[in-house]
Image (cartoon, rainbow, N blue to C red; front, side):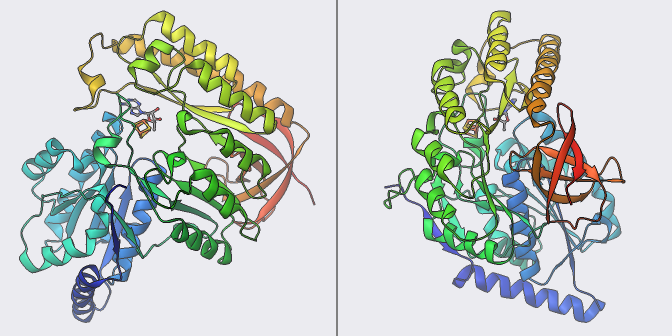
Length: 472
Ligand code: 5AD
Ligand code: SF4
C-alpha cells in the first residue's frame, strides 16, 4: 500500500494557523472598518478551478472577503498552470502587473501558487526577478495556505521553499463559484509519465480520496441543489489504485449514481488504458451519468504513441471507443490531440487525421507540442519546426470542424435538455447552456433562470454549438 498522509483542516496545526490569521483579519477589520479582501486568479485546467475554490474557501474562513478586483485586494493568490509554455508566460506577465499594486499598498500580500511554482527554476525566477512576490505554494501543499500566511504575518520574510507532500487534505473550506455546477476532486497526481507532460512532476504521485469522503461530498452537493457534478482527477479512471479498499472508479461511479436526486455526474480526465468495459457498463446502466466521455487520444500514430509512453495503440483505443458507442449510441466523445511531437513525420500526422475520420469525435482540444523542462520528450531529437506544427495544426482544426458539424446534424429537430448558464457572452439576446453531452446550446432569452433546466428544440447546428427554441 502506498503511504499517503491524510490531513484534516479541522485538526490541530492547520486549525491553529487559521485561528492566528483570523486574529490578524479581525484586527485589520477593527482598524480599517472593513474585512481584508482576497483576489484569486486561476490559470489552467478544471483541477485548478477546483483548487482555487479551496484557496478562496480557506481565505474566507480566515476572515478575508473575496473580491473580483485585484486593485482592491489585500491578498492576491495567482493559481498557475505549467502544462504549456504559453500558460506560464501569461501567469508571469500578470504577476508582473501586480508590482505597481504593491507599491501603492505595502501591506498587500502576493502568493504565487499551483503547478508552475513546483518547478525549481520558476521558484528561483520568482524569487530573484519578482521581489514583490511574498510566497509560493505548490499544488500538493495548497492546504498549507493558513500556515504560510500565519508565518508570513509573524516573520515578514519571503517564503520560497515548496516542500511538496504526498497528502490528501479533507475538511478544506470551499467557496464554489456556481450554485448549480460543482467540481469534486476524487484523486490527485499522476503516475503515467507521458513523455511530454509536466503533470507527474508538479502534481506528485497518484493518490485517491476515501470513497466515503467522496460520496458524502456528492450527497451534500445534491442536497444543496447542485445539478451538474464533475468528478476530477488527472487520471480520474485510475481512482483507487493502490488503496486497500479495493473500490475502483467504476465501483465509485456506481455508488454515486445510486444517490437520489435530479443531477448529472461527469468525470475527467480519463486515460484510455484505464477505460475498462466495466466502467462503460456502469455508465450505460446509470441514471445520472452524463452521455459524454472525454478520452484523450494525443496521436493517431502507433510509433508516436509509443514515444509518448501512452501504453495503448490505435487498435486498443478503437476497441474501447467502439464498445462505448455500441453500448451508448447517443454518447458524445471528445479528445485531446497534440501535433508536432518530436519526430512526428508527415505519415504520422496523416495517421492522426485518419484516426479523427474514424473516431468522429464530437469535439477535440488540440495543442501544438510545447517542450517542458525536465520531461523526456524535451530531450528527444527531431523537434518539429514551428511552421510545420502550425500548418499541421490548421489542417487538424479544419478537418475536425467538418467532422463536428456532421456529428451535430442528427441533433436537428431533437429536444435537448439543457442546464441554463445565463446570458450568452457573445450575444446578449441569447441564453446559453450545456446539454448532457456537454454541447453548448443557444436560445432566445426567455427569462429561464440560471441553473434551471430548459428543453430546447434544435433548429440549427454549427460545429461548436447548437441553436434552438425553448419548448413551452
Ligand atoms: N505540449 C502540448 N500539449 C500538452 N498537453 C500536455 N502536455 C503538453 C505539452 N507539453 C496536452 C495533452 C493533455 C492536455 C491536458 O494538454 O493533450 O491531454
Ligand atoms: Fe500528463 Fe499523461 Fe498524466 Fe495526463 S495521463 S496528466 S497527459 S502524464
